[in-house]
Image (cartoon, rainbow, N blue to C red; front, side):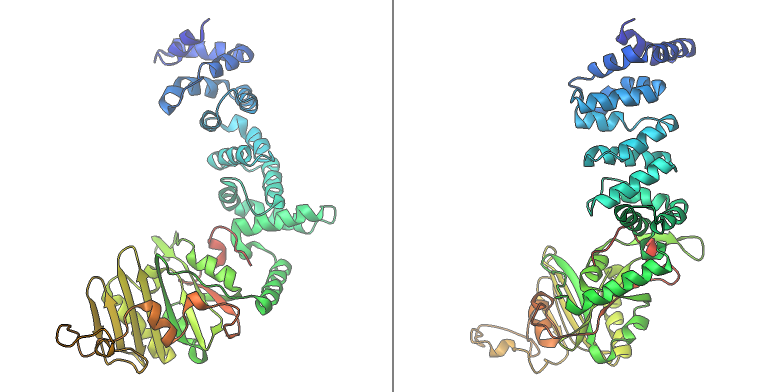
Length: 424
């Protein structure tokens, strides 16, 4: 029977014809699968693959093997293989696990994608996950999602593998990396957590700080190093842990997550990084909407609140794409100086001693130019260096004391809730 006729039967909607076609598929899979795959040559749209998809789904595991073999022989394109390998059900669970263990990065990603879709929990899938993380820092597509999805089930087995004297060092390293990918350092046992903390403290001694760039859009706060402890209470930060600058910056730049809140509703949570003391100041980075707030009044209130706890607080905001440029200084709960520019710059408060006043600029002509009497230094990029620390200038010559802290913006969440691993 011709493939076209068989596909028409599958798409007929007639229960008897569909059942008969399915039976023929099962009986003649070895002949039909190659013919089905030849029929998609040149197909570039998902909709055009659908009749073949239905047939492959009905055939099941033999069709999975046929698609994979055709892909290895380059008889189907990467795009077609990705679409076709994403349609099989639980009967192909172990085939997905075997594919996840493929050393080819792309094929392994298709395997993990299938494991995530089916929510498969198997020893073969666990071994594939360990081997993947043992190979290095670059992991296939969906591997991290799979580690998080099965964290509760895999955690005790991975911990046991970490302590298995018969396991190779490579396997034990892979198990540790898979644990961290699934549940952060919270997933590690006490022994491994202590080892990570020791490593962080060793790295802290020799690291050269590199802070985020504010080239396109960024914000940060600065507080005095001597009184920085107050920033944790002022910003509602919890579960702080020592961290290297590299890991802190990476965490602060990562996306927020949603977790179940105390009332059952979703709660948005992020991570904040408080730097080591840099030339006498501590800088704060993290999710803007969770730490500062979006409306202007929220920004002012946040800076004033932090200054109550820390004596002084400075806030800087740059958005080159949107044209915004803001800096604010508050002391003991009161803003003393602020600059904001969207189109026309505006100043509030008395100029600070270090500022260059507009009227003192050599190019200022009082006969033709106008400037408010308090118009001074413009732009966060120039102000931050005078006020505290310019993040762009932090490097080997910056005086550094202590270590950085990583904290979360809500209590009871823990660091393990955040996906991915951090570069120490």
